[in-house]
Length: 195
Image (cartoon, rainbow, N blue to C red; front, side):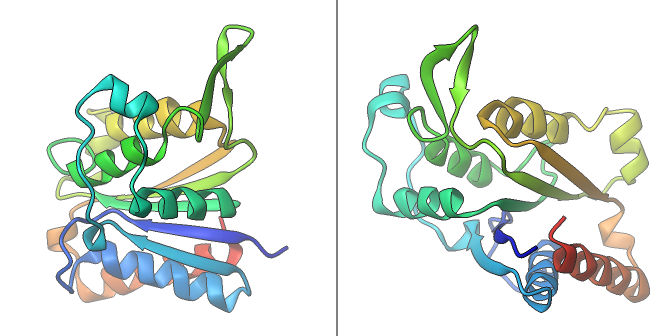
């Protein structure tokens, strides 16, 4: 079954040669070969301010750039977020984009359904791909995949995503060409299946 896929390339550096960019491109190639519809959003290409007040977050008017991001998210049935681990979390620009985009009234409603806010992005699935310099097992075991768990639970599940799968790629600076190509091949396979 064909899906509508939004790929968010969360690396803030527009320079080529970044593994994150290559992984996002590989997933897109696979998804297109699987006959899925695909849109790509590159954080490095966006210009938007940081949110600085609760009032702006709750009631501020999103810029056209952010409204376009919201439109792309609304359109998607499956979202892929690819980012490098920086200081134990996602890069600040990606977090800022999520804060700008996932506002009350768009991603969730302030009105309550029982004790919880109403989830306005229900039924979507996601794949989160995190690259890092440390070994992936160390990130998962010792650090308990903190930023990944936070993105999954505190953001994506909170706004209604059902299934959130993850890929962790460690030791990126030491990857051989063969290992890098294997990860890109894996992304193409995941993209073709839209998982």
